Every structure is written in structure tokens, then in C-alpha cells.
Length: 371
Image 1 (cartoon, helix red, strand yellow):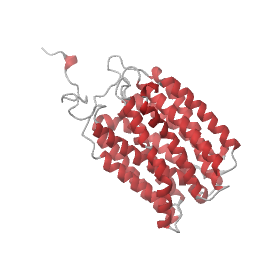
Image 2 (tube, rainbow, N blue to C red):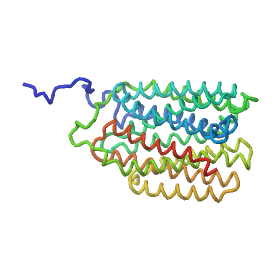
Image 3 (cartoon, helix red, strand yellow):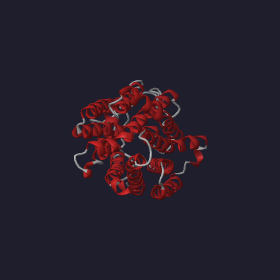
Image 4 (cartoon, rainbow, N blue to C red):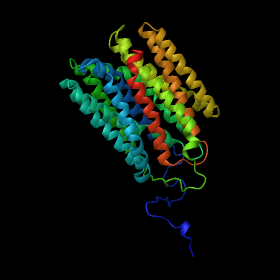
């Protein structure tokens, strides 16, 4: 007689296909390519969005104390999305979850366009919040790339590295979009961000159907919250430093250079955020969790020091690049750290990302101090 423990329980998701039949292994090149392209489009949307939110907030806010609210709203949306995204990945699979996030991003981009055309501060905050929700969903690309036991380091590096393209093309896209939308400042960039999410949606909708068995506390040998506490704390500090610096950078650059220099500084930041992944993809054995996390923290400290000493657009771009590289190594290191042991439940992954984004929110609110 079949034991009760071997029988499926209500709500438990099982894959009854042969291993690899759904194309969901690390060797599935098509799935990896689609994830990488979807993530790159999502990051492009984030670059375009974050390059205008601090300046738009400064222009439309009814008071100086509210200038960073749209920028902070982006990260609030990302934090709010972290747990729902984790549950949706288990219940409906990566195709549905990532497509939903991209759809919300496209809608948020359109709200942002309307806010910028109508000069409506409340809609600006709402659009930023929706775009942040899309950003929260896109964070789970890295968890989708790393299977249990951390054996997907190479796939994670490829997906992260693909986002380097977003930094390369963002200034050109923003410049073209602003020219087409002139004289409605920032509206073209917001529209381009919405279209980038549409591109991400096209990629994720093409993914093979896949659902994961939930690896909760009932899974033998699964990790508990204490095992991920240290990498979560390090990741949260990394997010705090990065968002504080990048919230202040557009405001600092606009004080000493033309407005198009802002997108350039943010683009250098984004390229530095993901370029280390391309280098490590060549030598994945160097992708060691603790050393990456430590070096990342040191680079973030160097970025903060460079920002305080900078007085030109070039100096602020260097600081932004250092902050981006530091964030990149912290994220890679802590992600591999979290996945390096026993299975981690989706609930813990959601709480992990939610904590990281709480650090991001605090950093965004502290951006005025750096500026």
C-alpha cells in the first residue's frame, strides 16, 4: 500500500514529466536566452525610469521634502511585489509570473507618461510604484536562474551579464525618445520604458510552461531563516548604499552638466552593475559567495567616497560606476550564498528580497542627505 507521505497533498505542485522534458534545466539554452533577453529589457526600463524619477520629483513635488517620493515609490512597489512574485512563481510558473510583472511595468510606464504630460505629481508617484512592482518581479530572474544547490552559477552570470546591453543602449534610446517627444520633457523616456517592458513581455511569454514543487519547511533538509540572515543583511546594506547614491546622482549631475548627462551617468552605473557578470561567466569558478560579497562592499564604500569628492559629471559617473560594480558583486555573492546550501523555500526567498528592497527604500529616502 502506498504510504501517505508519498501521496500528493492538496496544493502541492509536482512535475510528472521526465527530467528536462519541459526545457527547464540549466542546459536549456533557449530558456536561458529568453530569460536573459527578458531581464535585459526589464533592466533597460529601470535605467530609463530611474534616470528621470529624481528630476521629475524635484520638478513636480509640491514641497522639497517630497522630491524623492517618486524615486522611493519605485522601491516600495518592488518590495510590495517580492512575496506575491515568489508565490506566483510556484503556483503558475515563471512564464505567467514574469509576464504579469512586465505587463504591470508597461501599464506603469503609460501612467508615468500621462503624469509627465499633465504635470500631475500624484500620478507620477503611482506610475513609479507600478514600475517598481515590475522591478520586484524581475528580481526573481536571478532565483529562476539558480537551481537548488547553487549549480546554476553560470546561468545566473549570463542572465545578469545580458543586462549590460541595457546600459550601452539606454543613452541613445533616451536621447531619441526625448527628441521625438519634445517639448514634453521626460515623457519620451517614460514611453520608452513602457515599450521596454513590452519587449520583456514578448520574451517571457515565449518561455516554456513550468511549475516548481514548492520547497517549504516540510522539505527534508531545507534551510531556515537563520541560515540566510547574514547574506540578507549584507544585501540590504548593499541596496541601501546603491539607492542612496543613485538617488542623489541625477540631482548632483544636473547641477554641473546638461540634462542628457544624467542618463549617461546612470548608464555607466548600470553597465557596472552587470558587466562583472560577463567577466565572471568566463571563469565561473571565481564566483565565490563570500569573497564576492566582501569585495562588493568595499567597492560601494569607494563609490560613496568618490561621490563626496566629485565635482563634475565625470566624477559623479565614476562614483556611480563604482556603486554599480559594488552592488553587482554583493548581489551575485549573496544570491549564490543563499542558494549554496540546502533548498530554500519561496517564502524565504520572498522575505529575503523584501528585506533587500526595504534597504533600497531607506536608501532612496536618504538620497537627499547625499545630494
